[in-house]
Length: 248
Image (cartoon, helix red, strand yellow):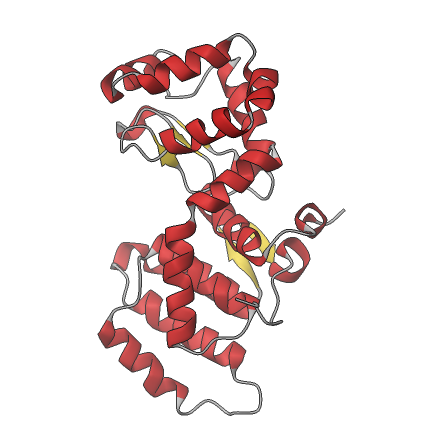
């Protein structure tokens, strides 16, 4: 069974999120929605596709939504710990950080049963949908970039979504370079060449130590296949992301 089977029926936005999450966590769906990172960076717990965390207050809203909208499922997963999670969410952030730090070993790895419970939550379609909603600000940036560069494809949206997450945006100088490059692209089927141009220009504008990683991610999306962090990607087969219209 190919990975795209797992994403069949999902929106193009969910498929874009799954791809970027796979890059971010170096795991394919559904595990990319369950990434658990301990306190190595002082954030206590980072979780999910885009590593929302307790320290900056970005994870708490997702957990609150899960408890409020899917409480039966939360009880099924967390059992007696469900009420403890609610109490934790009502506590000040320093108390939250102290609590989750006690659940980790010296290598910042979460211990059972918490690791298993968090993973089970991340595997549910309900919490994946919550993550997709929480990625809305990145989608808004991606849609604006898609309009700016007149991209029509699902891969075009995926590229801009990944840029929004990894790089923030594309500045005016790079935008001008890209649009100038577009003028020399043949008009018969320009989408792939436009994506490759954007990928190369955005990577070249990145901080040098991250440039190779940015280029690998962006060219993999632009060309539809590639290797990132040792994993081989085929966007059509694994994520259902093609040159078909994105429909947004």
